[in-house]
Amino acid sequence: MSKTNFFIKYLKNINFFINNLLEKNLNKLNFKNLSFLFKNNKIILTFVALFVVFISYLLLPTFYNQNDISKKLKNELQSKLDLNFKFSDKIKYNFFPKPHFTIIDTSIIDDQKEISKISKLKIFIRFNNLFSIKNIEAQDIILENANFNINSENYDFFMRPLDKNFKNGNLTIKNSNIFFKNFNNEVLFINKVLKIKYYYDNKELKNIFYSENEIFNIPFSLESFFSEDKSNLFSQINLSLMKLKIENELSFEDEKKIGKSEFIINKLKRNAEYQINKNSINFRIFDKLDQPDKIYTGNFNFKPFYGNLEGNLNEINLNTIFGTNAVIAQLLKTEIFNNKNIDFKINIHADNVYKNTNFKNIYFSSNFKEGLIDTDNTKFEWRDFADFELLESLIFVKNGELILDGKIKIYINDYNKIYKFLLTPKNYRNKIKEVDFNFTYNFDQKIAELKDIKIDNKIIQGVNKILNNIVFKKEDLQNKIYFKNLLNKAIKNYAG
Image (cartoon, rainbow, N blue to C red; front, top):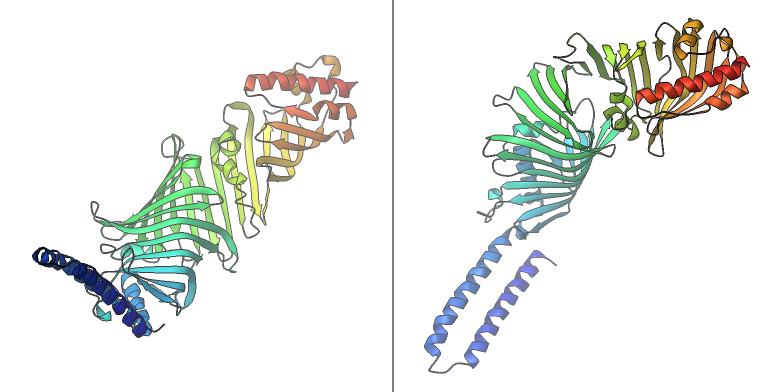
């Protein structure tokens, strides 16, 4: 139906409504109620006339030329957001619940490249002056079901609109996805956007960016805003599932961006300083109060994509890494690192293990690459009795539980001291130089399965049977007694 025919039909319907109203009232006309009828009809007709005029006014944008309105809306978005939108021909106007245009299948062009595809774009307009297309002014803007492609060249895309004016309207993004890609245009990970909103806070007198997201099935929220002089960007990330909060401040200096963060996990606090360059991020993490001299350093490189983290500690707390509710364990369970495009190494050296004086000189090595996580070449010492080395190892998730599978090689430095520690009877103290075995350890159930146990390159079936299934207790003391008894039983079987 053409716009002219639509308008004619609309006027005919209004005319029919008025005539019908008058006809019903005139049928009841008599001299006694004539004066009363004129007074009431005057009120009714005035109301109807105002209503008709108001609806007709709201319908005026329906008759705008499609090309003209498309050009005008693009200019409005460019002016308001500094974003270049590419429209399809599917532009519709509706005045309920308030006047707005809906555009189907839209895209955003950034630096002559398509950065986003949008299923539905809604542009709400002011209705104080709709008589001319020149008076159209965008107010609230809503993007629905959009897919954004982010890489090292446009990673700041979502922060740019914060510098714009949102006093006269908000920008909202709903039910969308952000694809983070590497230099080869391969997807590293996907951020699911539940809601993003840019708005002006009248109390704080500043623009606010707020988002609710999910990444690797982990929900988190992010809030950001600029300082008054636009030289600093402040943000706060909340991961309630992990009880983690990150407060961040980013400063802009020429081409470099300098930042500092505070990580708060329950009552534990850590600080970080970092620098963002064109193709990389360098950072260091430290504890200002407890261990100011112990620092983690690392970097992420974008072309090609890889990263590393190295650190030296007085002691390492394994519960904060692999405990049931530990942040890293939870991240591993989301299979966040099971991506063939991730190449990341972690090397940490610690003098001791937290609350365990038996182990020292721990060197924890891990490599996240091509969807696999191995801990090969991880080493530690048990007092001065023996040296341990982890080989052919792999961390993975099975049925929602964290599993470590690999091989351990034990080099015996002083077997006599080991026997004394275990209180092994003297008649069972045979000389031992080396022990190696394959194992599977379940971090959630605290169960270790040992197999193919070799003592000085000999497999002893009785020892394998005794040590096949080890169940660790909740208390360290129970574990020590249990483990000593188990090892002495295996030693007696080995000695014959």
